Amino acid sequence: MPDKNPDAPADSGRAPEHLLRHTTPPGLKRWGKLAVAVAVAIAVVGIGLRQWRAHTTQVWTDDQSVLTVQVIKLSSTKTGGALNLPGDVQAFTTAPIYAQASGYVRKWYVDIGTKVKRNQLLAELDTPNLAGQSAQARANLINAQAAQKLAAATTARYDALFAQGAVSRQDKDEKDADLAAKDAAVAAGRAALFSISSQEDFRRLTAPFDGVVTSRAVDVGALVTVGNNATPLFTVSDLSKLRIYVRVPQNYASYIRPGMTISFTVPQYQGRVFHAALAASAGAVASATGTVLVQFGLDNKDSTLQPGAYAEVKFPLPPGANGISVPATALLFRDEGMQVATVDANSRVKLKTISISRDMGATVDVGSGLSPNDRIIDNPADALRDGDEVRVANR
Image (cartoon, rainbow, N blue to C red):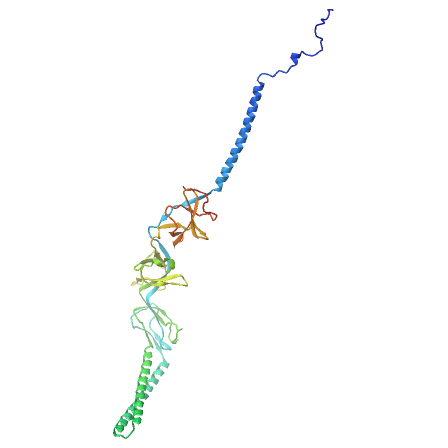
């Protein structure tokens, strides 16, 4: 058995020291640095993405807060329009025939629709009371004439006696005064008889002019009386000319001009248009209705139109004061008055107070407050205020 070397290390059963030391594998540090860089990059990208999304959300929120509006182009009313108004067609001349003497209808000769001539007999009345009054008036006149004749003879005798000095002047003057009173009584009797005789003429009802009988309210045996509440026995109308009465609102009264004409239609002639010229204007506003009564006239020799008919009149209107027409949907009713919302060059709302010269229903003519270059917001929201930012949809 060989001898052990005293200088050799003792065997402790462990691996050599150089074998126990840890050695970093090649490239590990490089991969570690790469992982850190990737983690940092992921963190940076995540943070950036969150910030971008937050910014996008804010932009979207701000974008949604801006109201989108529709703007309209102003139109110029170079030609005038027409205002539809109701009209009342009436005969140019109409005469209701009333009884001027009370009595009973003996006979009537014409009915409604009958064409009559001036002074043509319409009806006759029996007036027994008037006949009695006439007889009494004649008797009173005869009595007054007899008394006047006796007073005249007495006065003549007294004048002769006074010339002879047989009677006093006082007696003569009394007889002269009595004759004057009798003369006056005769004159009064004649006047009373004339009045009664004139009333006897009213027993005959005649037409005052050429025309058509448009109403009859009598029959044989009917009692007619004189009074303010009496019903007209006949109505005679001249249909050769007609009047059309139109009540024009006060806002349009300034457009009434001499020589102006209107067009109108009536229900019984669909599609046919008639024309009438201005005949007269009341020149005053009726406080109850706020309108001015205007009368137009036209010939109706063929009797096409009938009095009492309803007419739809087209009242002509000139162009607006400044030629700007705005839809009614663009109007805003505010405490400041009638307003419209406009959009300026910076897409900001500008509220403008306007005055309306005439209302056409769907549109209005603006008298002041707008210019032709204004961009008007259609159907503006009630919450719009001056300076609000908006987005124009139809640029």
